[in-house]
Image 1: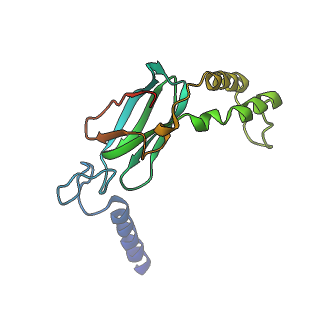
Image 2 (image 1 turned 135 degrees about the vertical axis):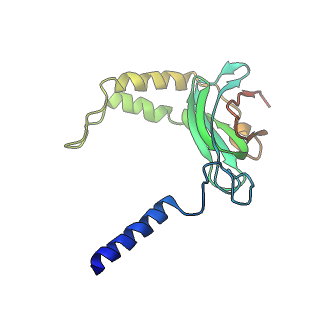
Image 3 (image 1 turned 90 degrees about the horizontal axis):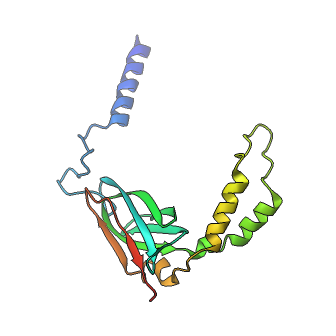
Length: 177
């Protein structure tokens, strides 16, 4: 009998721990009524999409980072100038980096020459079209638009975004500094 009572109390405590007992926080607001987000509290998330262009042309490949005032950045790779990323509500500095992607050209060329790696025993084989995918990526890297390094640093990019509920699109038009 004591075992059943102990097990029941443990199960109830586990349910409260998992579900919480401080109310509904799905609205993205803290209990004091203030909005949460990248700068504190529980976030309201938005899926941000957009394009990255340099001198009016889509940037073939690179990364875009949304850097909150507090916490870790949210980074995604983009291709053909298009990106999509979920971020919490809040204020962000934004960076665009193509230098890091371009530095991978040598490694990618070497990987294509060697062919796909042999998987360890029991591991799945690489996709059949892996070599084609790598060659397409290499083509994009070779056509890379050199975005000035100023845009890769949050202190010098001059790019920022305030994400509020309903924010869905952020297009970036980069110019030569």
